[in-house]
Amino acid sequence: MISKNLIVRTTFYLFIATMLIAILIPVFFFVSTSVYSEYEVYDFPRKFLPRTSFDLEIEWENDQYNLSVFDEANNEYELLIQSNDMDRFRLYLKRSLSIQLNNEEIENDFSLSKKGEPIYLTYKKDLFYNYKTFFSITNNAGKSVVNSVMAAGWTIIISLFFGSLAGYSIARYKFAGKSQLSLTLLVVRMFPGVAIAIPMLVYLIKMNLDNTMIGLAIVYSVGNIALTAWITSSIFTGINIELEEASYIFGASKLQTFRKITLPLAFPGFIACSMYAFLAAWNDSITALILSNNNPTLSLVIYKAIGSSSAIQLSAAGAVILILPALVFTFIIKNYINQLWGEVKL
Amino acid sequence: MKNKYKKWFPYFLLTPALLYYVLFWIRPVLRAFFESMTDYDGSFSLMFFSKVINESMFTAALRNSLLFALISVMLQFTVAFMMALLLNKKFKGSNLLLFVALIPMAVPPAAVAILWKTGFSTFGWINNLLITLNLIKEPILWMTAKGYNALLFLILIDTWTVLPSVMIILLAGLQNLNKEYEEAGLIFGASRFQIIKDIIMPILKPTIITAVILRMIAAMQVWMISVMMFGYGRVPFLVERIAYYTDMVPMLKESYKMSLTYSVVVTTIVMISVMIYLRVNKKKEKEVRI
Image (cartoon, rainbow over all chains, first blue to last red; front, side, top):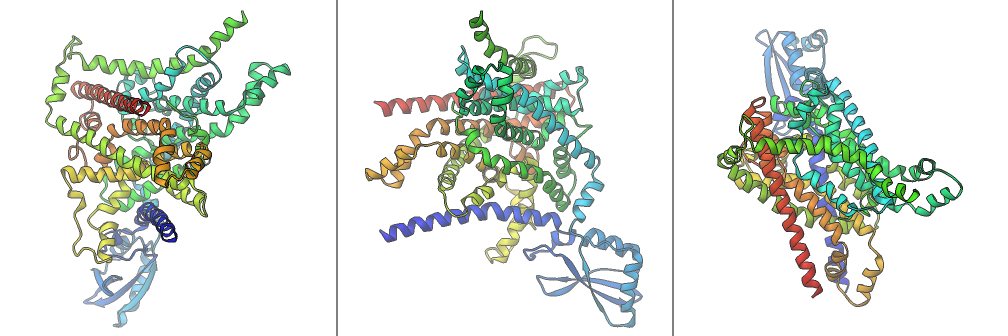
């Protein structure tokens, strides 16, 4: 009996450990990559933690400085460049090692080696170098963040309005065709989202909404209205109808009852629905590529950045920025799992 | 009078959503069907269907999409169900564990691709880890994977990403499950495995069907991780072809019609698969009853 219990416990902890490793290790190394300097990306094999500073060796030889960096894996200094052009050093330190210094600072430090002995310097790495660079070299990166937020905002408004009305109706009334309605969520999803966007482009151009965030939100809401209706109907079903009836007895109108009783009770569920709408808009890049190529969202900018740039550390920095808000919202959703999916049945 | 009003009120609440779907869903879908079944000049013709089917990548795309859906859904359901069973237990740190388990859900597709590229590139962290642990001597060239290996890669990456969303639905179902059934099973001497198989699974069936169908639909439409990891054409999928025609050869009448024909094909295949799944489940139910 004890040994059986032991096996169960061991399996239990093994499973948890596997889960933690499988999720956290990729995320850890991914975030590390976003703070790597270019040198570290190709430094192989390297230590697990990203460097925060570099140990450099400067040698004065044949009227030139030899710049070497300490290679942690091999425990020796590796020669990087030979030059006496301070501009070259400044650019090299910046681009390859993420060290931001100006020419005078470099010249002052380096010139000490002219006495004949090699000197050893430790320079701090700029950990946010990739993040700054991503925004400065990518066209429209700043604007794209604003765009993403706007597209997400409109998607939330549209999905909540249309979806919750339908959800309330499904939860509170009996009518013909009700049981078929829950199938719409599935049917809507069967036609690929990309394929909706292609004909939609023509309609949006006619409505003067191409390359606008409202236009994008209209397409994002297609999947989300059904989802919102599905989820809100499950939330409204969970709200005791007697509360509403009590309100009618006290002479409140339908609208008043909805505003003062039902809505506040359903509010947490609405927040969760908004998060799903937010994620749908925030995460998409292909619809944005088709409908709003000239006015991109952050996700589209990053999608394109991967195709064009070979610098993986820069794309990683962009991707970390993309993940952050989604991460916050996912953790809000976590508290509503039960309410959201508890009553959802086909 | 009041009765009549009551009868129409639910429809009145549904109208905005229905109108929205007529305008922004049914209209583009009908347009796609129309474009796929007509010639350039608008006369009825099935030439684009034959073009799609005779395209060199079509067979591979169809095979990959179906294999991907089959394997990934089975794998994801099994693992997600185990995770849900585990997280349904209350223990020290279970809330924190749920927190961690949901992280992949927050990673948008564009970021997923970068996340795994930092790992699978030649000097990436996976090779670095394997070399440091002395498991390999030379870096493995992951990104040159082809055919079934590449497909397996994509299945694993996709599984990492979508497990939480499958798990969430199953977990909600488990949390709403009446604990007494389980206890009854225990009293009658059922083993843990028997309880899961004969008590939890049957009661949870509607939830399981929901989760599996949602996943099936999404899995058959997979394309983005394939393009972002390997580029267009290496591991073709049906929806990847749609994206290829819109992204790589845009603004041509032909690619417009090709991508819409592809989407009609995808929708048909997805519908048939979902119907088969539902039919198989119904049959099983009947057998159990007999």
